[in-house]
Image (cartoon, rainbow, N blue to C red; front, side):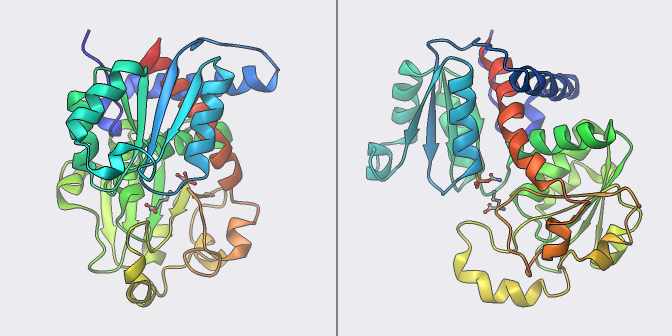
Length: 300
Ligand code: CP
Ligand code: NVA
């Protein structure tokens, strides 16, 4: 059987994704009950981080520890990856020793190229284009709080970035409606959008997008690698802060999510992210459970 990768949500079928969500919920319950479950004994995950991370690193490393396996943190600063060894050579060598490789990098093409030369599953832990692992946790969190996300309305308020692109793919795969509000010039990628036309709608007004939403989601205005655009972006995104007034336009039982790290007073007000509609902390914890389900799916 050819090796399966998880570079985007489109690499798995809708039913495979659904089974990962169900399994994540079950694995979470098993963990909370203190059950020891070690399906990845003696298996090793390599974790290549070319950008910073708190949640992704800790969740993957903890997942491998719970599963009886091991994880190796690989930084370009102290591996040959940072000294120009080619992606092809690195992929061949690393996949010769490891059972799976998780990569956080800049250009999405880099992870595609790595996957092409890897003999073991490659997992996208965030690129400039996508962040699919986060969506597994987000969907799990919605399901736990409100039941199936199918047919629901999600409002994405902010940048047409990697998280937005993964929300677009999730709208296709989990069959929900996605209302995207972003300032002109910050739209999501045209190709990603054009493949999901029947599931998404793009607005310039965040208030319009928030109306009747079951879930309101935002993310930082300046993603990793865009730091020099900070001032320009702050000006462009003025008015896109998710406040309690904006949340009041959504359905009464609407939830709020943020992949974190958050900037209170920029993309979200403190009373929203720290308020009763926010499930951001469950969402962060679910990175662990959802990725355990993903690792189990790819490796057993
Ligand atoms: N949400 C997320 O991916 O967080 P980290 O950057 O801390 O991994
Ligand atoms: N869009 C953000 C997500 C961080 C988890 C970034 O790429 O920096």
